[in-house]
Image (cartoon, rainbow, N blue to C red; front, side, top):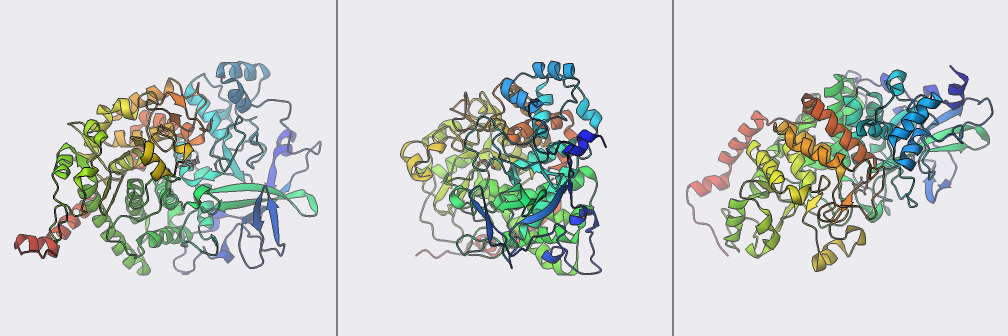
Length: 637
Ligand code: GLC
């Protein structure tokens, strides 16, 4: 090993974890998720707590508070392991500061630098912990040395790689944003589960599997955390919204460090929102990992199987619900602030449906799982019926709602949810094209949220929650409403924005969610990848290509913002982070999939014929429907 590499390398206590040895072991019947068998050693010290950057990290005597990996630094030649890049601006710094790749290529060629290898990955704001050198598993030095052209894609890859976060010297995820100009970091220095999904897919499609495998297995360990919010513990299957890797010096030994994984289940998040989507995305990524790599050993592991079941049990638990849709609080998904999406928001339902299908594919049949699989199948049928039937609107349906009778008390009511036609907003009359339609944002008693939410609609196509006909109609609408949904930057998170009194009441006067900004009608480049998967699935990749071309006009010049503001997405978002990783990864995945459309199959779910059969059996066996056939008089009170 070259001296310079030795200087940089941080050696992890090698016996501290070994994922490869945790195999499916049904015959032994033990569950490797028990804390005692977690391979990353948990620190159970008697230290009371340590304050770190304002956050208390307890190392309680009886509580597992953080995953700890003890690391020992290899002595450096000059004794300095941290700042070896000082004085030599990294390639990332140069991209961030100049925005010009040409200059960097010339510069690094002149100095004979290995492109991409010399990137200092420490956040300029001191935000995230990483090792001092890029060690990208499965990535040959040659591919990194490849001198980049000045393509946006090359720049995106460099930026994506420089966002990698390491845990005990292994890549484990990507930081949410790496914006040197931002003075307020908040939690953008963390690895977000939902944000990592496009990064993970980009790496999978590139043949770099280890980072995804590490991410899946480490987040799995965080799942069984003891999490509390003011003495209340949320369900055990919950996955964190994000986690942070912190490297801390070990007490009394200034040559030794430990890496600590510090998850946030919403206990610290703004508004204390529960990340319902995290576990669903985790299942979707796990299935994509298996499909892309052909390595099913990860999903077959006992601990992974248990993790899948814990998420399912949490989602399938009985409650007071009358609907098969998942009941959640406001801000429980990509829109993680108050935006009036409490109840049964479409995004969660689409991810739920997708995760149920993916889980069904991966669950290994065993004695104890029959009930769970039965519950899962029943839910799939009921959920798809409910969404296809009650969330769908097009011209015909809007007209039907417009003529609804209300106050129907009967089993056979046409207006089941007692929707008052006055709810139809004026904008909808303009927005609804004569050809096309979409799934509404939310449905509750006496309430239809008619807003168009992009991710929910796109993922309903991807997962086949929408019928093929509905899926085409959603894409028809996107084409017809290009100026509203794409305009100068794909893709509007929702349409339209809440304004005036509605904005005041629904967002709680949230200035970050001003009309046509952020979650309230802002435009998010990351949505490009979901758009691309949906378009490829429906054999309409041209729509996605067009959107990518729109993005390419400015996304790199604008430094990869998190979101854009204004009705036509003309301005970089007021509070948008620059160098937002999922904007970068979303673009890359779109490009990769357009170049290799077959790969979209790792992410899509095909319409399930068994499910369709079950659906029609269920409908014909429904006593309410039979009653309707017999034209029995209903009781009106
Ligand atoms: C914002 C987004 C959220 C994302 C996070 C990190 O809060 O709303 O979806 O996960 O930033 O990028």
